Image (cartoon, rainbow, N blue to C red):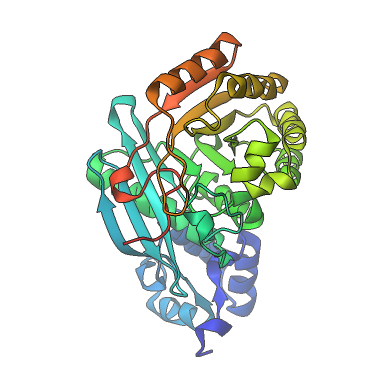
Length: 351
């Protein structure tokens, strides 16, 4: 097999499938599959030549059947606040971005990972939404972001990652299978062994997939990019709301919480004189009544082609105070990495 396209991507096999190839096609002992699995999913190996506890003959034989297609670092930028943005090149030449967000004072080191090349949802305030969706990432490509950014965190800050957020390029719930498979490998004892409670998957609001998360009894946290608790306003900035309105989303989130009891966060970008008034806060408080939730109020990070501006500090504080007075847990989050287009909504593979 000389063509890479005819080879089997070894990272798309589960453990039993890999064992079947190793014992059946190659006629080798089962433990060899375990060795290879460990190199791939614990050590992040991108080549068979690195697998030094395999025989030289086997290391030369494996690439004839299998391929590994790791992501490659293409460019790195560092913000004045310590945030690091990495652009990775995929095996087919497409580019994605990941962001390392260090907060040493809180002992928190978060990676924001991408799940798709581009996005199909066209949220007006999001740079990725202005791109076309090309394809979903493979589970290994999502895993690679976590593995490589963890290496960055250790190198630059002497500390491993503490949190993973699926808030980068793409809509994770429209890449459901590879996202779930990547989380399985990231959290497995024979993978990176990271706690699912340290993982948050963010969605723009795909109600039927939120219900699937509930049925699948996932153990990670969920974030909803809400940004307006009024259907007309949300339709204006997030076209996905026309098929997944607030009533439908509230019902789906309620079922998710009752089935999983996992943490739910609502992300809320405050736009000046659009969604930052007292009436908006009251609408949001009513939306939050059905399940325990934390509201993160986010500073808007400007992008080309969207002319709204961020709300001022006074209005944000008044908005947050109104939510708190109505019993809603609320935080105001300062954006990081704005100077390198690494903040929320800014990922678009810009140079």
